[in-house]
Length: 368
Image 1 (spheres, rainbow, N blue to C red):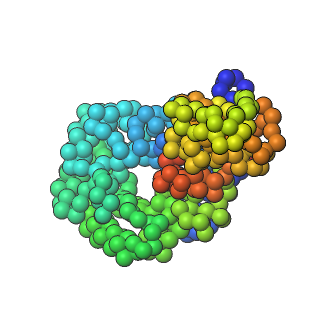
Image 2 (cartoon, rainbow, N blue to C red; image 1 turned 90 degrees about the horizontal axis):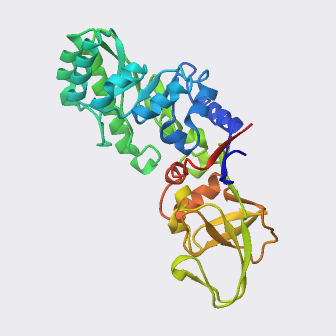
Image 3 (cartoon, rainbow, N blue to C red; image 1 turned 120 degrees about the horizontal axis):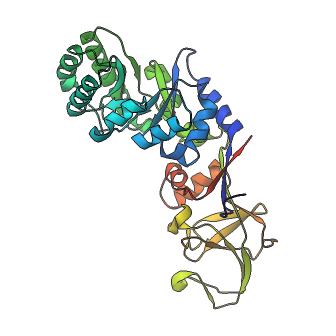
């Protein structure tokens, strides 16, 4: 291995394809699929995943310009939607043949101006409407202004109209979600009636695909966390394959006598003599400090080893008193979806945060 960091993130390519096919099975044959590969592919490897999937999906989505550029430089030719472009980088979006989300009248007018200067024709844009997430997007009252701006030029064309469900995974919020869907239906119908062409529509994310395909499948869906093995609900996650496994090794095993302390700030004090293993991964690699002091755990030789003391920047110490192990043995930091979900709940967060926190200094290894 070229990288001196022995901690690796294994990415199971067969599992990714299996998960994609699982979600495809929920959809009509003609429904387009957009795969979200922002945040380094939810902490994995965006370029490699996109290259593997690009013949089987219709779109990719990233959050920011530089993520889209990385895909293009990696040889990805599939259309790429940039979800959160800024005025200052619209020129680069054109240069790299990316497709911007337009979410405000200022951004729309600015992009039309740039498109005129560049003498573009029918450059694809995507209009984002806010139907209740209250994060980004036009609202119903903007429709008239939008249509006037669009119908008075030929430089850009609306490829799609979309919105984002706020709580698609929470069936207790079903009434609110259906209200969002109805609002989007009303908005998109009104806008499209004012245009002389018909953009396609999309609204569903991973949980939306699992819970609302009857009401809001539309022309395309956006598959994010589900591709990586998480259904945001135990009953759905169990049908998905595990994609990522975070691994390291034991650097050193030590015997700590009763009454001694372990780690910074002497956070852990022994009540009996114990055996510890030091592992080369820490909060600089994405292992949250909250996992210290017996909150988080890893697997060594198929047994749980709890993290003791404070998580260091580059190391953790785990209790291996009752585990037969040796220096150099493999350590599973994140074993599977269930392990990640349990760890996330322990520190009151979600799997998304654990996955996207995995540092880029951790080597990515592709597995068939």
